[in-house]
Amino acid sequence: MSEEGYFGESESEVEVSGSDVPAPARSFDDLSLHSILNDNIRKCRFAVPTLVQKYAIPICLAARDLMACAQTGSGKTAAFCFPIIEGILREPVPGREGRRRVSIPLALILSPTRELAQQIADEAFKFCYQTGVRVGVVYGGTRLWSDNLGGVDILVATPGRLNDLLDREMVELRKLKYLTLDEADRMLDMGFEPQIRRIVEESGMPGAELRQTLMFSATFPKKIQRLAGEFLRKDYVFLAIGEVGSSTSRIEQEIIFVQRNQKHDCLGMVIDRQQMHGSKSNKTLVFVGTKLKADDLEIWLRSRGYVAIAIHGDKTQEERRRALKSFKSGSTPLLVATEVASRGIDIPDVSHVINFDLPTNIDDYVHRIGRTGRAGKRGFATALFCDGDAPLAHKLVHLLESCNQQVPDWLIQKAAESSTVTDRHERRMGSSWDAPKRSWMTNKHGRNSFYW
Ligand code: AMP
Image 1 (cartoon, rainbow, N blue to C red):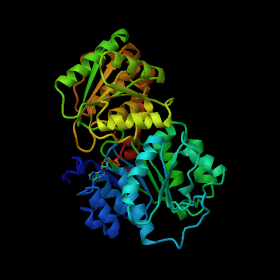
Image 2 (cartoon, rainbow, N blue to C red):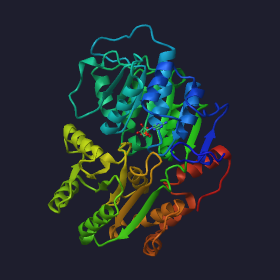
Image 3 (cartoon, rainbow, N blue to C red):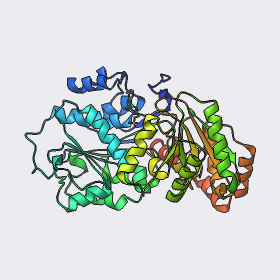
Image 4 (cartoon, protein in one colour):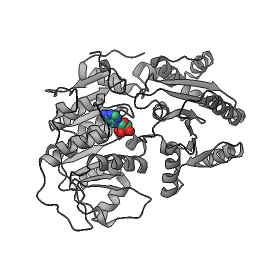
């Protein structure tokens, strides 16, 4: 298959596995969705389904469980929302149950961060317009409850806040028909596994056979495979779009070697260079390692005349919302962020991601740079690499090579120097980063070809 997806992805990058997998849709018309839902899709100006939508929606409409690995920005929110809304519209429940302050949803969408939860809910609100299907969203950091959550059909939640509400008996999951885990890998990275298990296994939610479960994840490491094995029905369909865990070659990546005490000057140079050759959108996301550094860098940038704002976990929800809004609108073109802003947040037109501080693992790097190059657009990513980042060199070289990017000689040298016994062992066994695809190939296809 050589057809191009809506966002420029190639269908040759699609892997589907499972028995009796429904055929992909070529258009939204193929899906025979409810007319109101189709109206809303038109209002959103979605002309054709993205690749993940073409494959995932028919699978979900056929009531199959799904484990999907897809790039950030691939249109996965609609891929899981449309079948849920369609399912609720096809089989309307006879009158909503629940007291005014108790939510007994039919669908639950779990998300790792407040921002992603709000973003999913915003999309779901649009898709549900005039359908009668009600959407609610709950996450920490806001007032505990709003009265109008009783009667919600689709609840979007972060795991911590949902457990809190379950404990207070403000949410009941006994009627749940659809469970979606979005950014499942991220939720586990953030330590949410116990909370997720409590929700899925101890809340009174119907078991795997009685509900439909959809898991979305950018990567497919062992812990996600295990969770999929436990939460999904045995005949679940596996769908992978693009190389799992990898960034696309649409993102041009540059790694600059810099001494730690020269990072600020280098950052100024990189921003000035971009502004000189500026594209229409100059939105730049700068990642730093700590909340303190985010505040310091905001001050430093402002003192140099740049228009910048910081976002991190110590800011109030209102401050975070305002920062994102002013960045999204373009009035503040520089957003300094800690990891909190790195996954799942859909900010249109981010032209440049700068890793002022590199993360310690390659998955986080992939997710960070995935903030640019979205929706078929080209993106640019710059990383300031200093001596302390040497442990990342080896995986960075592999990633750049797999994305057809130029690999600086000095980085190859650093990778060779930092190749410890552990690295050599990992290379033989497959690193955590490439493990998803490798183990997928060995498990499901009986192939055992490694990448290395
Ligand atoms: P997501 O991966 O769900 O965060 O989606 C990324 C962006 O693509 C969002 O701004 C969506 O509104 C947009 N999008 C999703 N599906 C389509 C489509 N079929 N056509 C055009 N844009 C879409």
